Image 1 (tube, rainbow, N blue to C red):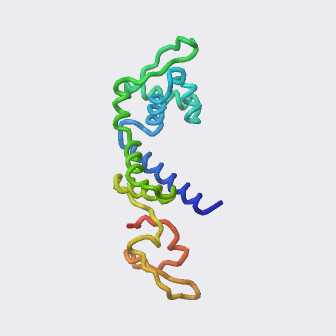
Image 2: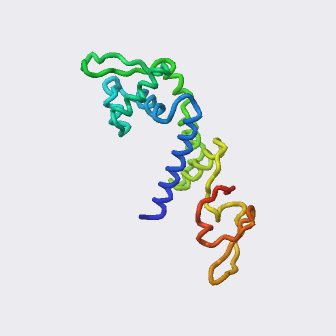
Image 3: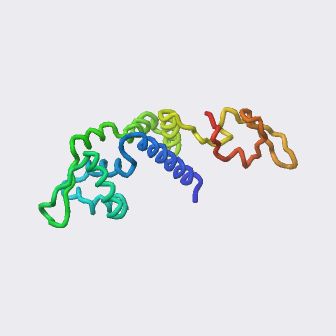
Length: 186
């Protein structure tokens, strides 16, 4: 696998986790947000539990529990289907639509819009991640060698280069310097 593709996959995964953390702060969980987003985009023939389950790649049982929770929160309304008596049609309520106006995904879209500027996908995703970290007051978990506290040295100890972390005042091997760190600061 090419290193650029793996790095891009890592960036996408980290961005997704930050977005999920943002989703957890509000009145809905990530599965409920996904269901509302789908229902807002789906045509009238596609607003069924079965279609939602297929779209999300989830089981009908899991989707059923999500829909029950959304109905209790007055975000959706289920009505018997006029086309298929065994199914129900799902519609967003005004409250469900209102939640979507405050969708945490809008923060991510703003990050993408603000940072793209003709960059490569990897560079753009890196900037998106940095902006999402800033907006969420999250830790960057960046590569040690890119941290402001990283002190590169050309000295070798026992045949291996030894760098230093200026924050923790500890030695770092070349291998350590390429790992992510909770203390990372740009």
